[in-house]
Length: 302
Ligand SMILES: Nc1ncnc2c1ncn2[C@@H]1O[C@H](COP(=O)(O)OP(=O)(O)OP(=O)(O)O)[C@@H](O)[C@H]1O
Ligand SMILES: [Mg+2]
Figure 1: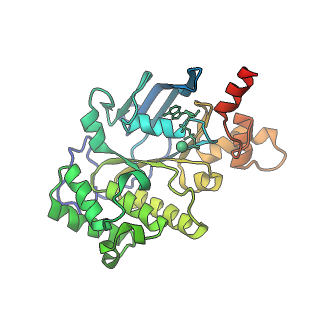
Figure 2: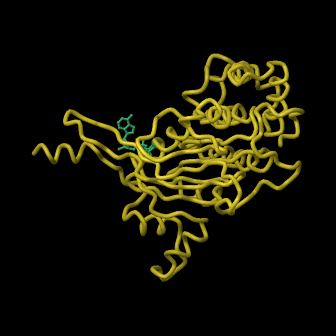
């Protein structure tokens, strides 16, 4: 539970005793409710003039434990963002189910919305407004008391290294890395929370990238947050994630801790495998390869 919160703002489904270490690795043990349960989730899109059906997410199953940082690693077009959107109720499932702390994304959509936060700097912010104003807006959206939320926002940001002075300037005057941090802080106004970070560091310069990665670790260690992040960055996945799922063409092809994944392919490599060799083994491609829908369509037309 966040220290600064004198009363929980959403009904905590499973209250955590104060000071319990939140770092937990591995799937939830039997009897423990997962923070996020995804069972055979499937999503199809109809694309192009020929109305071709693309299966963006294909029977994906994962069970994520409260307090974990869980990484979804896949090449462009592999279905990462679609999966995140399904969890955040922005898209509806064509098959399977998704539950957040036992709440079904379709039946209990409002409850799920209170428990999850999809952090996307571009979509979630008013750039002309300051971090303060943005956080106050978010607080209203979540039905929190504005004055309390303001005090909490200051405390959360201060604990995470952003001083009060910086909070009154328009967001557009802050670096992207800083904006990303404010976006994450905004998501911490509610607790417990499942943070969905879709490529939180893509496009950041190396310094800001490192900053945001450290920030994510701090959030994991200091808040009651379960973090699901997507990335193409192998080093980032290895550094941050307790467990990683490899996604290829909408399917999950492997899952485990970075060490487990490397052990799975160790016998195929003379020297110690890297996460990159794990990815190559399971997907048959490099992370830089693009998935190209249009190419197939053109081929068909020839
Ligand atoms: N709204 C949509 N309409 C039609 N097709 C879509 C839509 N959103 C995604 N797709 C298709 O679904 C597949 C998965 O896309 P998605 O954006 O989930 O991949 P991604 O792994 O997030 O890729 P990236 O790394 O580029 O962000 C792709 O083939 C994409 O073209
Ligand atoms: Mg994406």
